[in-house]
Image (cartoon, rainbow, N blue to C red):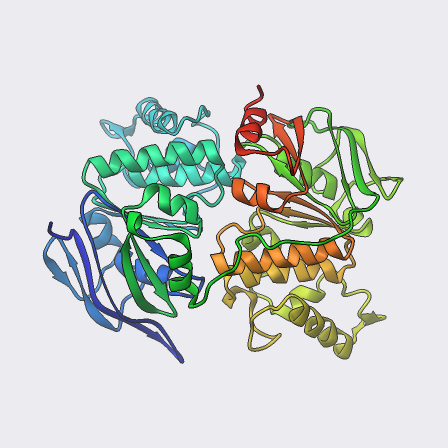
Length: 493
């Protein structure tokens, strides 16, 4: 079979860094070709050469047998190359339908046919199994729903090659199944799908071939059905990882935080649960279940209409994030780039951001204390960086997540809420985050972990509380928890 897209000897260099080192790979019509590697392996750089976002220093791109030295965004789109990036390319103020058909709006004469546009947008979203008002603005949507709009927007045009960069990261099981249905229909139409993901179990579900990259180099391509998880991990990281979820020995103590009959004006209805010192409590549910809303309410980011929050046996009055921080609560948000890390600031500035008052005498910040605090947490959390003055935006996803965590720990938090802690980070960095979570719990901290990854919930949680449409529908111990039981409770049955 003739490749629809072929990359030959692609090289991309930046000052002091060879991001792509002589990469050659072929993509065929009607296949799902997974692209895997740790953060910094060169995956995103490679797909940006295909989309025209960057130009390679050397090499050739062949599309349907035509040779190109480089692509441009306009050319790649004209040829039928669609890209769904990790960072969404949506216009928040526009509606779902307007975003889906942005750039190729449906018209009746000289005017936009909004009725037809809304109808077509609804058909696409219905194909994902999502009932949603397509006239509402994108800014009102959760991260998961924004991802579905991004996918819908890309496939609304005629695509021959569809590149999906971590498309399932913010999605739960139901949304992923709907997305896989779309991918399979595109595959049947002869579309070549390049699927970039760190979620190993999804790679084995959806892909036909897997290409591994490491440190900007091509390591190899395998038929998915002929390889294994250990082999792929070894190719990705150059070493074997002994176990996916590290075992932990810790003492679970008294109740650290208890939520009693929590209501919010928007969604939550009579939410009650508790988490103990030294415990990792999993919070499960489908998109729209209210998990993130619960975390935000506890932290003080969203107003509480009714209910109580008790910390270490005492009723707390939390009306703002400042109150939440003062009570020792930390929220590691789902979208670390938007709500967690200060990307344009250094690692040091991020770590000391919340604790700046404690590091100061009057209006003068103690440089010695500031640097010592940063050094302490860089070492403790094993943040990989050449300097504490490195800009946070230049770190890998896993290390950015560690910086957000360091910022919270520096403020002396002892109740930590992780919202999708490993979203968009590679398998090696995931295990580092798991180890850190176990270490924090072993130190007596209470951890609430919101996750859409079922293996992560089952592998890391001591208990699991399940939510559906703003309500708690059940609680499962580690011993009794199974994927079937969680999904049953998450469906509201």
